[in-house]
Amino acid sequence: MQVTETISEGLSREYQITITREDLDERLMNHLESIKGQVRMNGFRPGKVPVPFLKKTYGKAMMGDIIQEAMNEGTQKAINDNELRPALQPKVEMDGEIEPVVEGSEDLSFKVAVEVMPDFEITDLAKLELDRPVAEVSDEDLDEMLNRLAEQNRSYTERGEKEKAKDGDALQIDFIGRVDGEEFEGGKGEDIRLTIGTNQFIPGFEDQLVGTKKGDEKTIKVTFPEDYGAEHLAGKKAEFDVTVHSISAPDDISVDDALAEKLGLESLDKLRETLSGQIGEDYKSVSRARLKRNMLDRLDELHDFELPPGMVESEFDQIWHQVQQQPEEEKEDKPEEELKAEYRTIAERRVRLGLLLAEVGRKNNITVSQEEINRAIAERARQYPGQESQIFQFYQQNQAAMAEIRAPLFEDKVVDFVSELATINDVSVGRDELMKDPDEEEAEVEKKAASKKKAKTTAKKKAAPKAKKASDEAE
Image 1 (cartoon, helix red, strand yellow):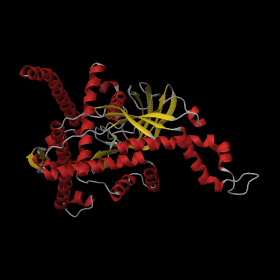
Image 2 (tube, rainbow, N blue to C red):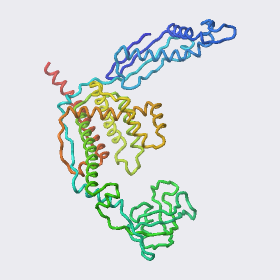
Image 3 (cartoon, rainbow, N blue to C red):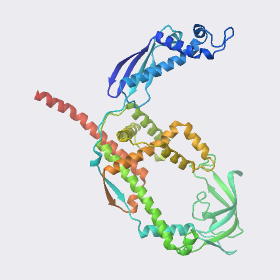
């Protein structure tokens, strides 16, 4: 087997690999020798079929597997001998036609293209200084939560026979919906509880129930929204025949021991204590997420190294696919090329950070145990009662899905490791500041960081010729 490096540029490597037809023939003969004891053929005693006869009979059919095995071996040899760390699965391309190789008239010749992991120095993590926003649970937070719980557990008192329904009342109704005079699937309901003003139904439906009385029958006319989930109903006019069985008025809410008892606790003080703990844990979780975002942003600022083009392209394709799937009203009003450039810099940032975290983990022996993975799968399986065994089986048989479980666990362990080394400054903020939409903020952070990185790289490129010129003049 001959392995020759033909390309070594940046992170790209390419190797020309040749395996002679004699080598392939020897591999085939050895394989046939190893299986001849299992072959049964008329005219021969068990295990006594001559190998040349087996070759003539089965050789061509088996040569495909021999060639594939040889190509895998050659690819691995190129990687091992050159101590490569592939960033992606190597691309293998055969030279010429395979038929002459199968027939044994030509050598096997193929190319292996590999993108390798970049070499880079990790900044001194102990010198990192990061801000972590934190918020205390205030009395206002607790009061708001208690009032919300009281609202959710509000009791209702049935109105009198002649009393009319008002906004906020709870009605028990039957309804039958029709479009163009025909009933439609999902348009019928019996003994349905509807609270006026909660916007549970199509816009305009609830408003027309204001003023009805117990026992009333009323035809309500509405129009389905243009973006309604069922396409065959979107934008259509509909009529609903509604029968009102009962009307109940909301009682005043009360935040007291009775509310706590209704929720399974002995007193209001105990309820406040429990809620304070729950809100506090939520705040801690958000604080950790914010610290992680600050950490990633800072690490991205401190590192600039060449990225495997294939990894960037793959990440960009995923991002762009998600962008294309967005509803038209949510898409950014920018030229496509400008958007693509913007999202490509985001893809580069994500790849850079992924490689960086992976390298921190590798150099510090950070791993995710099978037990940790199993716990994560079990937690996910609990979301599907009765299907737990199928969920476990799915992950056991699907390596890509297993990797999706492992990746965030590994990332969190690396983030925790970096947090222990870095200096963390807790910054007190209000609840609203802490609870900003993380998805919107993350997208904004990525865009700013990516633009900053791109500007920095462009500046370097522009400065390079001047530096060279100054050097030439010095000579």
